[in-house]
Image (cartoon, rainbow, N blue to C red; front, side, top):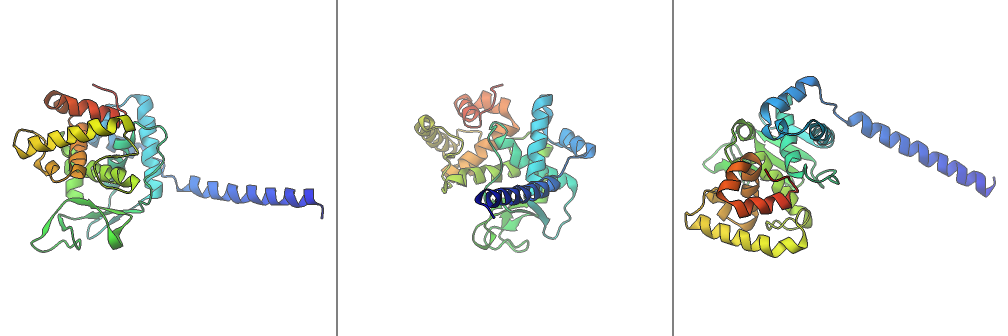
Length: 258
């Protein structure tokens, strides 16, 4: 057998393998039905305010997320609206980035029937005060959310959304540190202005001189997540009450200023 023929056969084999891989991936994509699109319109204010072109991109990101990440109920049934709200929570913070593909290392989102213990994820006992968290240890690669809290976050534009909060934590962690400085999003010239702003805003919260959720004063990472909820849920209110923070988040998330 000649060298040219061997090379030709290997190339043919490689093409067949690639075709099989791409076909399997294409078959996994969950094409959104008209009912699913209606759910997004009714429940997701951010989606509702997008242009027709932007909505198509949002839909594709939702489809991609649902094809890659399992959504499992723990003592609760997972319905299509739950899946769509989880996906919307994941997509909203990254809509400003055309190069975004997926959340690295995220394999599964667990939905719980209520609050849970952040140490052992139990749904019974006195320590059930957690609505959402990024899993660690044996739960690494998972996000855990209270199903009622997930829905509540999309019910009112009230500055809070537990789904967005936890996915912002995931973005923050992409550089290996959960420190409130998301290297994937923030440009180096913005590092010091952002850190200084966070420091000042946390100080204002601790002095009861801020309308930002006091939980944001827990740490720089929690401040970033809490401020991001506020930014996406009630941007006009954030712009009015915290204009400098609003403008900084516009840059970080690559959004248009309203």
